[in-house]
Amino acid sequence: MDKDKSAELHFDIPPLRPDVVLPATEPEKLSAGFVYKTVLNELKKGKKFCFEGTFGTALSFYSWLKKQTNSKHPVHDYFSSRQNKHALFKLADNLLLRISNHQAALTGAPQNGWLKILYPEEKDYYLRFTDFLGMNGAWQWFKNGIHFPDLDKPVHPFYGVYFPTRNEHISLFNSWLLKQPVFQHALDIGTGCGVLSRFMLQNNIPQITATDINRNSLISLKLDMEKYGGDRYVKLIETSLFEGLDISSFDLIVFNPPWIPEKASGILDQAMYYDLHLFEKFFSCAFDGMHKDAFLLILFSTFANAAGITPEHPIEKEIGRGRFELIEKVERPVLQTTSGGKDWLSAIRSKEVIELWVLRKKK
Image (cartoon, rainbow, N blue to C red; front, top):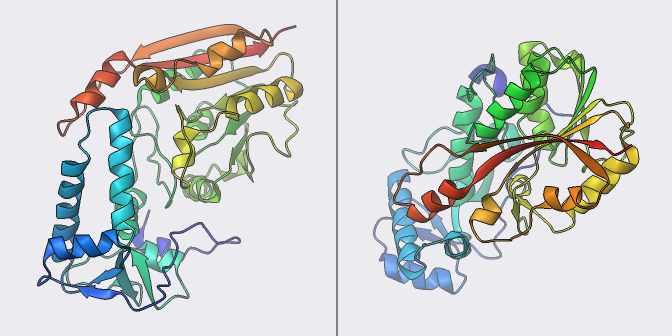
């Protein structure tokens, strides 16, 4: 995404963004001279601090805070990793950063284009330090783009938009699509960064409808489509699953759902965690509304089974109900390894399987 053009973006509906923090009292200034353990004790009591001085000092304290959290909440499996993440979030929630004229008020802080795009009218305010860090990483992805194997042009995920960090399921989908006759009207449920819609467009599907509950996802795909000239083929709708849609005209419905049964706590989490009723609602609505000859394609992973989170498999459970017939199932092991000493995650990956399911209503 060109830097000069991205700063001029305008939106009919404001995109989702991290909350501006409005502390009841002025937060205490946190600079290089403070004793870290003293600050930690105050953070535990709920006191808010605002970094001052250099960005490097702020990063040093945050790195130390993560080490303290790792020491108190060591990670050895999926469940302990969630506890560790929650503990760090609770402490870091009170670490603030002052933003002035679309720039972090710290010497050496990186330029962050989101500050101008997402907060055009705000001149002097506070953000959570962790939100700023997340925005900084997201800005690099948006600006530079992400290349997926076999996709002709990079994806530029907008802020707050989920994008796959692994490629096994994306490759499965593209390989399957290449073997099929051209579909005429496809529906991409929960499009995220739009990578599946992009592959369908690349494979000459003339009409694509992409939906998502996260409006930033639709903004993301819209910007890429305008950039690459495919916007006239893709219709964007902000909705949850099939709400408000007549799905009888689609001959292909694609769904890359969340893979982990757990409560989502933010817009990015909605792409990774699902509540217990998601699949029941999805399959019931699909069965009631889709054409009898349409294909229902679902990309899934056995991560939750491999991690010991649940013994259930929602797609197998649905097939057992007898409403859909299995047309095709393709599996692929996870080949990549993890880094950073996460042996527990490597153990899960060694048992995890990526799946592509193709279903059709029983006649």
